[in-house]
Image 1 (tube, rainbow, N blue to C red):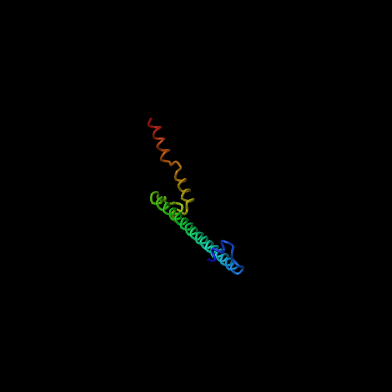
Image 2 (image 1 turned 60 degrees about the horizontal axis):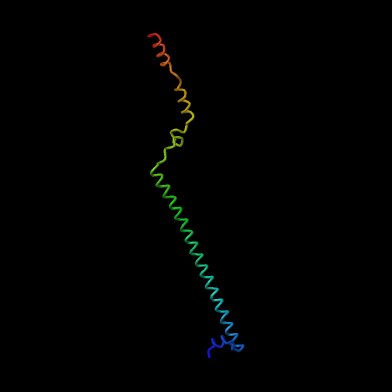
Length: 115
């Protein structure tokens, strides 16, 4: 009769029972270690997938910005142009020249005298 049949029939002596107990415990330890290793591997693969998904999202965002900027180019910023750095003096001179000139007043007097 084999040890397996003796174990099933509960027909083992103390030494055989200790041997079977040792083998069962060793099998449990190995099984637990395999489960931990598989769990760690799954976590590692999950992490890799997460990192790649984030990278894909970054690349999609960058591509969308590039496509948008090609379709709608930015207008030049006149305030950033070094030629227009003195913006206040430029606007001050523009408002001074916007005042009515004498030519308009002369034109009004000519119309009044010809009517």
